[in-house]
Each structure stands twice: as C-alpha cells, then as structure tokens.
Image (cartoon, rainbow, N blue to C red; front, top):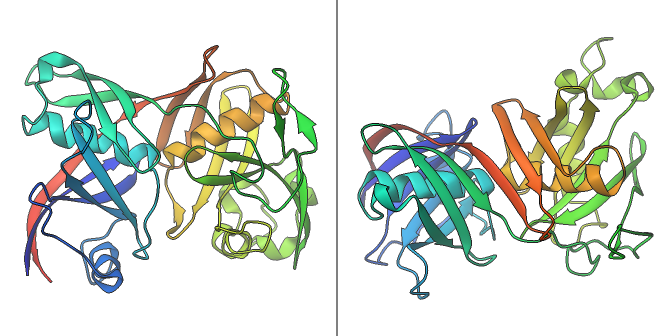
Length: 305
C-alpha cells in the first residue's frame, strides 16, 4: 500500500498525518510502529488518521494511534496539528478562526490564528473539564483530598518502586495522568541519574517512566509526569503511555497545571515549560482547561507499507 502523509509537530511532539476521509485505511500495530520508527520509518510519536465525523458540529474526527499502535482517547499537541492540517488544506476556511475537532474524549472547540498566507500558526484548544474521580481517571486508590470546589481527588498517592516510593497526583484529561512534583532533586536515588548532576533534565525518564506507566496503581496504564514549579512557570517532563519519553505532551501539560493548582503549588494559569517548547495553560472559572500553543508542518511525502 502506498500511503500519502504529512508530518507535523506541536512543541516537538511529532505526528504522521494521513487523510482518511474515505475511511478505507486500517493500520496494523506493526505498520504504526514502522511509521513511527525514527531509524527505519518516518519517525513520530504517533499516527493520526483524519476521518469524517458523525457529529455535524465537528470539522472531522481525529483517530489517534500511539507509537506502539494502541488507540488513544486524546492528544493535546496532536489536536492543534489536526486543526492546522484542516485549515492549511482548506477543509476549514482560514477566515472562520474556529473549528471543533471530534475525538474519542469528545468534541474539542479550537480557536486559531493564521499568518498572512492563511496558514495556521497558533491554536487555543478547549480541553474540557479535568476528571478527578479516581475510578474515572482511573487509578486504583481512594480519593484522599478535596479541591476548593469540593471535588474529591487523589493527592500525592505514594506508589512503591524499585527506587522507593514516589507520590503522584492523579488527573484525567481524556486520558490518565500521574503527576509527581519534585522540590529536592538531591533526594532522588542516584540510580536514576547518569552522573552526580541531579535535576529534571538529567533524570532517566525512560527507566522510571516505563515502570510507573504499567504499575498496578494505573489499571489502564498512565502518562507519567515529573514537574518542578519555578518563578518562570512549571518545568516538566513526560513519559507518554504507549509511546515513551516525548518532547511535549499537551494533555500532560494540562494535567500538570491542574495538579499544581489542586496542591497549592501554583495558580490556575501557568506557562508549562517542556523540552520542545512552552504551552500556556489556563484552568478557567468554568472548570474548563484551555491550552494555547503552536503547530508546524515539517514536510509531506509518500511511504510504501
């Protein structure tokens, strides 16, 4: 099969996009893994098939596959790239400045900006309300705290590992996230760093992230975030479920922002500083989380499967 594709990224979180408005493309797990392979394939964190939506209010449906071929409910950076794909190819007129994306976690309203040529440059996505109920995240634990609005949630749940216990605050943004805030990197086990230089940037995320992603506390696996709150915003790294360490994660940035606010570490509006760039996240008075960030098309091509 000859597959026409475009590669796009949002703050370094990259994707292979395929036009499937005909609904005749089905990719096996092996094919997805090949497309995402950075040595033998195109190289990406995931694959997006763009399909018609059954909802007349939505521009199209985003069928998102993780790099291992598993289906994901939502991808924050991916949905901004999804909007750019539709706008830049005329499926959505640039003059409309807004569209709604259909996803497995529900419709996502998007406002976007374009340059002088009508190409989309920036998008703000209404990511909806964060889910805090432990059974819905899901996390195998009882709620142990309440938000300012009285909503029960899992705050700083200790989870055992080969390197000791780590504490996670659990949030779903359409997919499960477990957030660990770190105030003192020197207290972290030496085995999680390649040298005596112990900080977020040098953390062996692949080792610790892979363990917690699949640990029993998270029955549907989880995206694992480590974060530090500073004067210039919240610095974070993410190990994505079904993918591994990535340069950015939109839903992860939203979850970290919510968790920071819930635990009193920060307010409701923050710059989330990821390895691939910065996202502006606002948890509004309407309880919706809004994410603003760029989307970039890298190139287009054809691949044989």
